[in-house]
Image 1 (tube, rainbow, N blue to C red):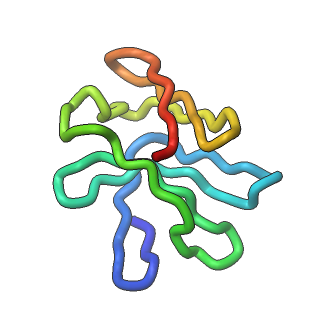
Image 2: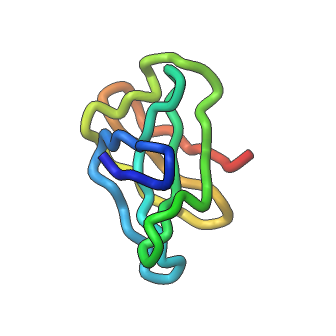
Length: 88
């Protein structure tokens, strides 16, 4: 678990780190809804969130990988498929 202020983030799949952005990208589940978060490597604060459209299990990556691809997008791959996710 990663603590960020009053929030606690439970990570599922292996987090990704981006040297250019200085962010650690990790999966989370807040209020029964999956999301992806960007955590500032230097401060430990959550600086970006990508909530998934619904609470479907298809967003659970079951230990899969996340790959940031730029412009607020990433690919998530797990048990069910590879999905391209866009920032809101």
